[in-house]
Image 1 (cartoon, helix red, strand yellow):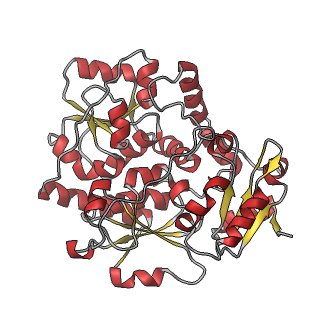
Image 2 (tube, rainbow, N blue to C red; image 1 turned 60 degrees about the horizontal axis):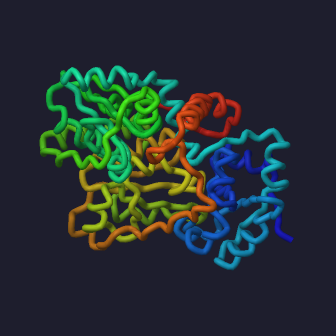
Length: 414
């Protein structure tokens, strides 16, 4: 009989900072309806595909649950994980109902730790923002303003704010000086909803950018709810950073990262982070195109903005170590500064010579979640009903209170 771990025991591991992976093995849609804060989604249908990538250490403490439509999927997940060589797999005592009955907080949606963290950042730092109507008035008046879209490029192409340029999250501090060289130019950062615009705006504030900076309040959702028109198929991308701007960005990024408690490591010392009983994730936070052209062996592609946005997907083992690499000394430290504030032990690899990036080719493609099990995000695409978009915003506004009620987040905002 498979051993179990109780709500109290799981919570104790989380509070102690121990390594633990809590997995919901239902499909994405039921997972998104209710789950613990630190539960990551690993559908039963994808265990053989994703487990080794997401849990590189076979003796990780793993706790699983997942009852759906009267069928308990967790015992099957335990069996499959055991067949893959995982030796410390436990069932969550009582499953999700047991968590609820024990008083555990439950969260909706996906990428909840990152989204809740973004709300806490805004709450603690009072991140500046402007309403959609205010931003539109600035654009219409041809004011001295640039709009920077912090999402992935494909999301930006689907729908974007008029005049906006694609500058995915980790690229902002590196490239903003090229797009707004005059300190008087107002910089507006947007995403689809709230998280990436908050984190992107606060990144520029933390890095000491002299320009006035603000998030587009509620992103493209707010723009649509205001009755304003979005562009489609835009292709504007940020230019490369010049050497002087790169040096300035590097100095400010290092300062922010050190204040957050980030550590640096040399390539020859990297193996020392792989201590017994410790999981180490290695990520290259540059753009997918740069990664494909050449990357360090053993490093997976995770563009920095998306890594902060989807931390539960990339790093499901809470308490694990993370090491980040770039080639400029800006994107890795800025990304690391956020992960450290989220409670991770993060190291930045000192920039390496181009010859060290000997592996080439794209990151392995992630198979699409089956349509029958996928959770439809209220902020994606162009046809979400206004009621769903507003409900999503209302949910985000309540996340800070949920964090306080849950008590396991371990976040510390600079």
